[in-house]
Length: 439
Image 1 (cartoon, rainbow, N blue to C red):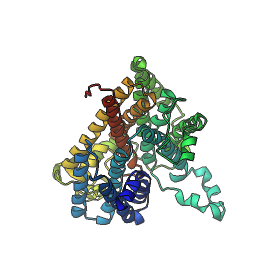
Image 2 (cartoon, helix red, strand yellow):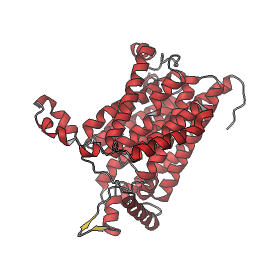
Image 3 (cartoon, helix red, strand yellow):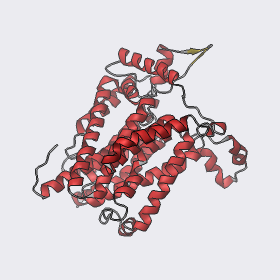
């Protein structure tokens, strides 16, 4: 009886796991409860299936990251701050491995594709509410009725660059659903409750959802005024469109570059700056200063880093930069890979690069295998994963908010998990046809 109950829960683990990850990511005061829920679900999966997780190329690098997060808590000069960041990292890894263990069928993968589009829409709608509000709306915000004060409470909850990074990696998913299989998308029956599956299987539900997301995400990206986010989104779109129309892929960089050059030198980009208050580091020279200090951290603390969330303190104490009489404060390294190294040392950085490289490999293998099997909808999801990871890499050159620096750091881990799940499914499909597995 207990084992049957454990199996029932394990078959549906992704939904309570999402609750635990949300608590650990968005609510620092409840992060411990979220981590306890994640631990409980992991133990239930172990009891139900006889192993803590299925064999997966992410298992070893994920274990190294978790071990380095534990080291970070030990060496940190501010364990409470490091715990908040560590909770986000654990939540992201748990989501990644939870997706790999849960998504065992075509229906599960189809649900995840729609979930990614919904997450993108939700983050796009939160962007104008969560970042600094336009000056022109400040007076109106003060006149909001008491029942709407939650709107003002959201203001400033999210950094614009954090939202931009998450949006840049999510934008390929609704577009992939439209370009690869707008009508004949795989059924979701068996993966969610029947009424929900009935709705998700209707093209007249999916298409408006994707179109709405594709309208909301670029608008939210524009509002963030994050040039790194725009570059990441451009890279993601290029990879996705090159996957859909390989023959035209070589022309896309020229078109994107010409459009970007025109926008960069037009008044359109400066319009939001007249109305929005932003705190982003916009100067490339300023980023050069902080990258140099991140390299100092890696040089002086190669084995452990300075601890999760401790980069700003370490730079302020050991490598300060003065602006007049004041010390310039750098909250993070403004580079994804330097930030991981500063937080977790060279072992953590190598583990993260291993995991990211594996995710690219898994996405490419899935796109190739699913294309051979004629599964266009799932092939589109594999290309969306590749596009999202490419967007994250480009964005990561200029910012670190797709790491656990920001509250959107769970999104790349979800994409990595989906890429591995798609690869595993494509290989099972090849096995069933009796063909040789390559790659």
